[in-house]
Each structure stands twice: as structure tokens, then as C-alpha cells.
Amino acid sequence: MSLEITHQTFADRPDAAEIDLTGTMEIADVEFFQSQIMDFINDGHVHLIFDCAALESMDSMGLGSMAYIRKTLDVKGGDMKFQNLSDSIKNMFINLGFGDFLDESAFPMAVVCLQCGRKLKCPGHGRFRCPECKNILVI
Ligand SMILES: [Zn+2]
Image 1 (spheres, rainbow, N blue to C red):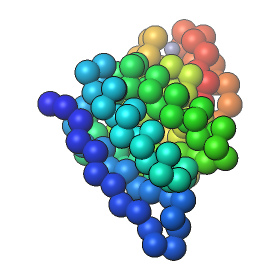
Image 2 (image 1 turned 30 degrees about the vertical axis):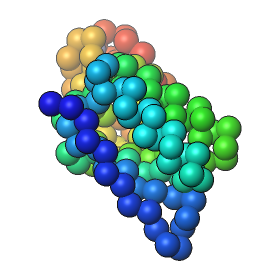
Image 3 (image 1 turned 60 degrees about the vertical axis):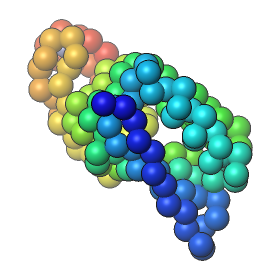
């Protein structure tokens, strides 16, 4: 499986784009992903909504690429949001310290501590300590 990227733009919001991700976003997909998204950004679409309903998996390279895209958007005064992320990808964001990628509307949210496997309920953004193993989650 690999990554497929489709997108739509909005006549009344030329600076925005919705990007639908299908498949996997892993080390082999990252170069393709990044070049496509940089093209959108260079075309002036700096407010990006990633719809991840059909995204099956993401690895740390995929996440690193998202972080790079966000840095680029920050410089250009843009932003990015995610819709329909699977719980496992949400959990990875949180466990790797990228919980602030998640929309406020996602809270309170059930997550699983990557270190001990305990189920936790996160009230919102911030630092959060797992009561079981004391692992710190940044959300
Ligand atoms: Zn834990």
C-alpha cells in the first residue's frame, strides 16, 4: 500500500485546501507527500485541512514530514488541521509529543499510554502524566 493524495480547493477561500490522504504515510511515501504538499503551499494554499478518514497508518517519518510542513506554514502565516484521524494515529501524535496537532474539538479524548498501555482520558492540551508509569505525554 502506498499513499494517494487528492485535494479540493474552495472558490471563496483561495488560500485554503482540503487534502484527502488514502493509504499509508510511511518512510517510502514521505518524499512524494512532501513534494505534493509543498506544491500546494507554493501555489498559495497555506490553510490546509488533512482529511485522514482513509489513512491507514503513519510512521514517525510521516509525522516528521507533517512537522516540517507545519513549520513551513508557520513561516507563511498558515496553519493545518486534521480530520477523521484514527485512534492509533492520534495516539502516536500524543506519544511522540505532537498532541498539539489535534483539534480542540477532539477533547476529552481517550488515549493509550505508549509506555505501559494504560487507557487514559485527556482533558485537553498540555502536559499530562500517566498515573501508572509516570510517562509524560505532551498533548
Ligand atoms: Zn503509562
